[in-house]
Length: 249
Image 1 (tube, one colour):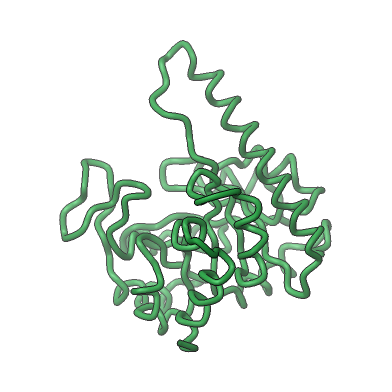
Image 2 (tube, rainbow, N blue to C red; image 1 turned 60 degrees about the vertical axis):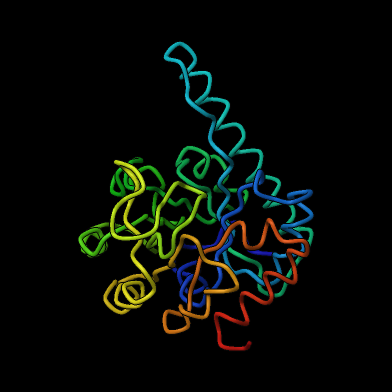
C-alpha cells in the first residue's frame, strides 16, 4: 500500500518509472467499474479518476451541478484508494483525480497522489499554490507550443494528445479539428518528439488501443481508457497493452 504521507520527491520517482496510465471513467466500463479496475490495477502504474461530467447545464443549476460533480469525483477517488489499499500490491499505482484540485486537497491525507488539470481548468501555478508541495500536478498539452509551457510551470507530468482519432472527447482525425474547440490529432511521431524534449514525463493520450499502442514504443508511455474498461477481460487487456507498449508482443 502506498504511504499516505509520501513526499512529492518519492512520488516523482514512481512517476518517472510509470509506463501505463489508466483514465478511469466509470461509465466506460463494460460491466462493474470497480471489478474492471481491480482486474486491471496490477498492470497499470497510474489511475486517473475522471467521472463523466454532467451534460449541458442550465444557468440556474450550474452551482448544483458543480457540487454534484465534485461529490462524484470525491467518492470515486475514495473507492479507488480503498481498492488500492485492499489489493496491497507490491507496486501500487499512483492515483490522480482529473481537474478537481479541491478533491485532491480533501483526499491528500488519504493518500491521493495528485491532480491532472486541462488547459481550460485552473492555471497550473494556482493549482500548485493550492496543493502545496507534496502532491503531483499533471497538465494537458495538445501542441508543441503547449509543450514549451512545461519549462515554466510547476508541474510533474504532461498528457499529450490526442495521438489518434477518438470519440471519447470528440477529437477527429486528420489535420483539422473535429470542432471549433477540439485539438488536432498529433500522431505518434510528435509524441516521441514531445517525450524527448519535455522536462517531465509525457503520457500520450487519445485513441490508443491494442492495435496501435506499439507505435508508441519509442515513447514507452501511454494513457488509455476504454481499451481497458470496455474490454471483456479488463485485466487481460491491461496486461496485453502493457506488453505491446514495452515490446513484449
